[in-house]
Amino acid sequence: MKMSNMLMLTLRETPAEAEIESHKLMLRSGMIRKMASGVYNYMPLGLKVLKNIENIVREEMNNAGAQEFLASALLPSELWKESGRWEVFGPEMFKLNDRNEREFCLGPTHEEVFTDLARNEIKSYKQLPVNLYQIQTKYRDERRPRFGMIRSREFVMKDAYSFDKDYEGLDVSYNKMYEAYTKIFKRCNVECKAVAADSGAMGGSGSAEFMVKSEIGEDEVAFCKECDYAANIEKAPCTPEKEQEEELKDLSKVETPHAKTIDDLVKFFNTDSKGFVKTIIYKADDKVVAVMVRGDREVNETKVKNAVGAPVEFELADEKTVKTVTGAAVGFAGPIGIKVDYLFVDNEVTFMYNFIVGANETGYHFSNVNYGRDFEGTVGDFRNAVEGEKCPKCGKELTIARGIEVGHIFKLGTKYSESMGAYFVDENGENKPLIMGCYGIGINRTMAAVIEQHHDENGIVWPMSVAPYKVIVIPAVFKNEEQMKTAEKIYNEIRALGIEVLLDDRNERAGVKFKDADLIGIPVRITVGKKIGDGIVEFKLRKNDNVEEVALDSLIEKVKQELK
Image (cartoon, rainbow, N blue to C red; front, side, top):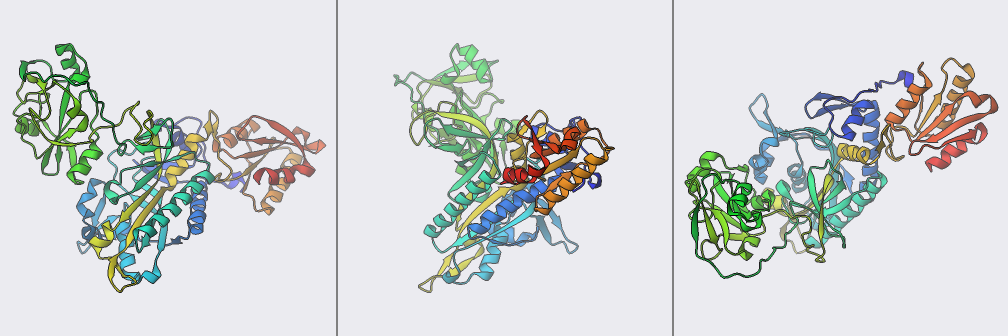
């Protein structure tokens, strides 16, 4: 492609809206342009990268035995109501009515559609296993779109669904997808790790996320320093810190008129936050939930939601609700006498002695409180893992790091097949529910993750596998006829090899061309300059600063070797 014919406008200044490097560089390099909050157009350069990633995904999915399919993005509500998710998915779903007032949504995911397809097409065990996938745009009305492609309201996703006759078959399908994903991200030159994850609204039993370590990641991941254990913080189990046994002291009510927060109470009681247990109150649909964790711990809301049973709406209780269930102002909630539908107690609290809680009376707390003697509740793991937590696999220390999720695989089991009647006839003539798996990759999120890992102060450094063009040929002086003719000859010879190549034939200074080449991240740069009279050109790789002089008669062979 000749750059004089391209629709490509690079920006020298970073747009104010861009917060992270991938977003900044995608805008500056002319890869994307914003239409609305969380909604972007892919410009020609950006679309080429997206298609290159799609092709890698497609090749590895096909190699793993999956078949490509394309579903509609406009989905009737009936399917979602069958599965019970029309309300469960919540306000992120874009809903609309047609002219006949029939309800539809823009597909945020496609479990229901693929299950409907399977129940109509798969009748016998002889047709199994089957793995279908598509690469398609999804829609989610994110409350807070941000970070460009990392969290947008419209995104490109590869989603696959496997159908097996038994759980042994599901394990085989799941492992094939695990291996395919590992190959996909390796080919995209994305360094990522598979971590245990919560299945969330997708349902099912087993689940793993492919996470890219990044300071701007929205997910926290617990990594073991010694073994290969890793889990999303939503999923990571916690090991209770057991206190040294103490003699139980008499319960005592203490007036604390101006102490509402843990910090206030630490000063008031002249102790540390480990001596307190805080009671956090939530609303889960029409239920009220209280969760108790040690004063220096944080509630894991995903674990709480799973314990309640995946509520549609889940949020911190408002001041009115708190007063209704405690009889006190916010800041004085405690377990003794509280009127809630669920009282969840983190198991660490049961190993504490003589701790302090709110007294459910404004201006008062109880001291010397003990679980079992003074109150009881549903005991479980309800907090976030922390740095230094014991690894559940080897017992060594965990470290916490942020990450970007680029892929997610689920063992769905029969969650959708049973609710939607997707059955097959087995070897014995009996009707059995299809055993399902679900496997997703964020295509544009993977594109952003590549940039997050491959950039420098001058712009993007695309890996060869996903680069929009592999080579750029730059004549240094537009008005130098010999340079222009030689550059076009090199360009045509490289094109003839089937290699995607750019010719920067614009009437611009050499410095402008070099800056644009670095910004858009083309892996190989060939400069036709003042030594062309001696049959010499400059050869430079984007990933380093070395500039090599190469004879014209050996240039094409060098390009072929570099791309190999």
